[in-house]
Image (cartoon, rainbow over all chains, first blue to last red):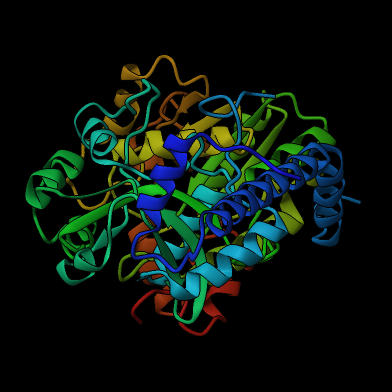
Length: 72
Length: 382
């Protein structure tokens, strides 16, 4: 797959790359996209866990209260 | 169920995957070492006891709390919740970066450093305590703080199941517990003492009108001569197993230090118990006071400034035994003179127990007294 990047942006990326370990614009863009995708994945993962929180957590709380003798 | 302070119970736990990642990052981040007392505060923020706080307070909130006893958002808040650092540590930290909060070798939380600021310690102490007398144990503790404060939200890294003790319940847990017990109304009782008959009278008196009581001792640093945490809890266990209805009473702990901040601490105590689900809160004579730094009823009068806090304070004077009434009473109910009255003086009771002597049964249940007498070192500093 080929993705076009505006020339102006390519120039800015090249400026950013100066003094960094990136050897090409492609490498830089790949790295940034990987980070974005990773963060989005993590956010999705956390949201899903939070959505399940209420019901599951209430049960966990009750279990804990039982184990401590606060509930029968 | 009463709304938590600020609308919802704060939870600064993160998902397991994020926690694993942050624990790794903590190893490489600048470290802030904290003591046991501050570790309790990190947890109190993280698990919602201090809702709506989500971290350590920035300068604007700090000053607002010190001056106006409110947060910038307008909610009542009377005691700054702060993280102090010294000059050397300040050099290592950058606003906008993260720092790892460590207790010994263990990462406790990650802090998003919002701000690092200095503060006028002497002025702060005077505003908070009404005195800068270093004989005041709270003042002394405060003046020992480092010179800079670091603010920011925290992400809690410890195992959520870690507790100070088996009585350490989070606000979410007490709220579920009250619901399971069917309590529509509940009253919080703060204490730093083993129970005498005056406390028992007051607690049971309130249970005539309120569905349940949360007896909630502060567990943490206290001044020399106070009961140890263990003595307080053992004494309450002994009392409650024989004399309290299980479905009407809960014994749990509030892990934090005593600040001896009198009126301000009374409001703070009420807000924390509101977060735990209490609709009412008991404020006695000289609540959280020490020596004669505060007026007898100053801790009750301050509530006039907070008509918006939703948790209802219940004000009590002290109870005493009346030889003519043959029971615990108060000056609201007893017509007899002082010659008939035996007041349960905390100091006298502690002195008797220290000497291995049981106080009169009218003032302290003999089995409670015996429990304390049998303990090794029931008082701090003995």
